[in-house]
Length: 384
Ligand code: GLA
Image 1 (cartoon, rainbow, N blue to C red):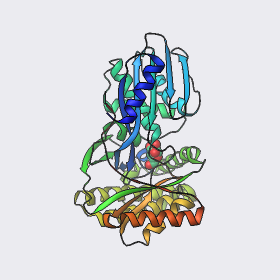
Image 2: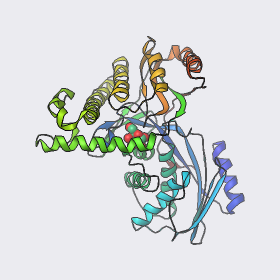
Image 3: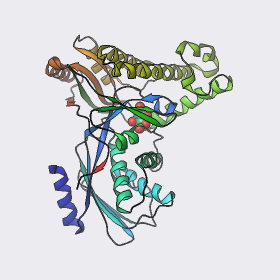
Image 4: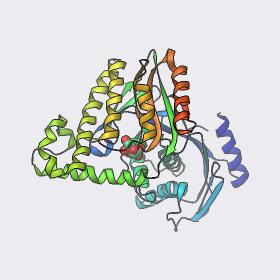
């Protein structure tokens, strides 16, 4: 068993005395299709082998107790008194709250957890936190929810106490990820197919800018409102029901005035990113990695100049990759305003690229960036 899993089991037993069930809940990467899960688009995430380990057991009382090893913090409350309590607690309490709202019977339990997923890096530690607890409770209390239902429940949990109106991508990848596969998730029909992740000669590497600008969650909700505003204009025309129905960003031009400058930019990005992701899926299936990589750069450019969710640090890292002939593609990943870039790099040039990026970034921002080689993994599961 993983060392971290053993450790959390021991901590659990010494704190709460019971023998717990053990679970692993992964983070995710996203190859392409950013900020379009809440815009009827397609996205292409994979679960990864980094995540959060949970120990969970029923405790025979009407209270729930949590221990976060990484924050060294405990929290305890009555099942009849679930309310927002700040930071990590909002994610786990949000899950309990959603089970209760759905009429599921949750009894008293204890939970300890610890992870190896960097927080604020755009690898979705929040979905990992929600998913691990939801999966464990579903099993322990024999609730019978499917993985897909659990993903929806976790998404609602994030809308609740944390107040981030996220799409479904992260929770879906957390529940339905498969090793060595990318999930091509259709976010309108909420259905998926798997694409083998075969990157012979190339490797995926993340460079963590190690910045996390505080705007992130408020700007996320603003982008959502702006996107909805743009969609209403399209729907009023009677010709489009969804961003997906617009096949070319140029077709939006006639709506520019009605949308206004900012919303028009957002809509232009959304339509472009949906089309890019559709193309990227066929390139990945055909293993045309260089063509795939070009779309990654295109995605970044749209996120930076039209959707405006990048930042100076991420743009700098992507621009370093752009001038390097060994890099097929690079882009910011996740919600934005910091976190990681994802890079598709010739395997033979991987070490040099990582070193050069970290050096140049340090010179420019005086910040030590970190690199993670990506290994994919399976969705949340019981491990002991
Ligand atoms: C966050 C959200 C996701 C998705 C991404 C951007 O990770 O949780 O739903 O919108 O941002 O693609």
